[in-house]
Length: 448
Image (cartoon, rainbow, N blue to C red; front, side):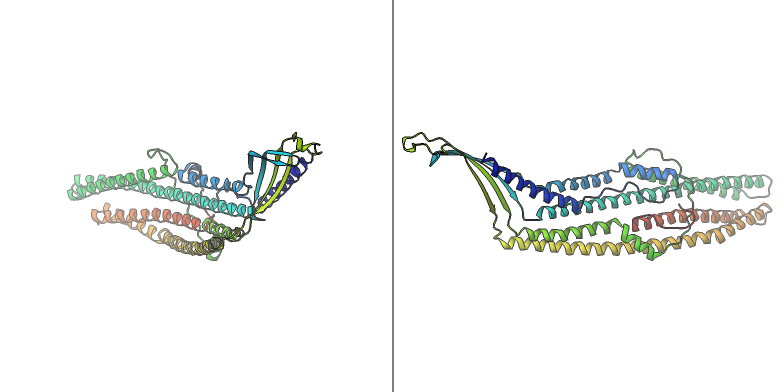
């Protein structure tokens, strides 16, 4: 009964210290969880499907998520006390005592770091896991942007293919008219040959676009972790968004949502905790031990009459402390943590500068493309359409030749192709702006 009392007290002390440390650590912070949803522009159902599939299956994302999960598992490891140590000592020659010979002993020892050390270790591990979570979220944004860019490039190629087929059909119609005029003696054979050559060139342009589409489809399939030759349906014509961006608002959104900034912030906070942790390493650690010595009974004549405690086991309780004598080692640890804090502070400043630069570049490109599309819609396309109609009328009456007709037709096709290219580039610029701020761009009116 006397032996059990110190053992219970030591156990309660160890439990209290462990419990206090773990509770404070868990209350301080917990690793965040990934976002359940991503806020991005994708009116077309197939684009949203592609983005969702890429986020779920992309190998690069799965790797980043696995690294985050691995970092989370570090938290319970660093917040736990070291394993207790049990020692068994067998006396080769027993030590005689008043109550009997000491035959062997068992000692249980538990080490404790300085007060608050486990809590700080947990905070540092939590913040490192948080930084890796933000890196994972940044990679998710990268994948979303790459899928959308590939999709919009496919949309341009599909629209250009439609225009190429339309051009080929129109040239074949002109070739029929030229052949009829040549058959009646009203036209030249040279016009027929020239139109046939233009038809061949149109077919070649269509083949080039089809090759480009195959490459873009393979790129999209790679992002979706599918076979490169998996069929990709034709992309429907996108809707043009109304572009009205407020740069100051975008900068504020980037400060809140840009994942690289949030990762750097988590690392700065972790470095601040690491400095405090490094300072605690210069503090002593403690040990608490409880032991039981197995004492044999005395039955020798000198031990008679037997004492009252003859053969009773001995119970010991001890405490100890480490001596942090090597101060240079601990100063180096503090300096290392300070250097890391400075590095992450500069990293965050660089990430902020990169965010502002990307916002500025994407916003300028977005606004420029929007004005260029307006120019095409309000001036160039109506003018070239009217010019082609006038040229067709003049050609049918013999006032103009086939060269003028081809020139008007080619100008209209070029302008219309330019329009679908500008629209695709505008949506890609909007995607880049979305990636720069880390969330959906606030726009008014139609959305892509």
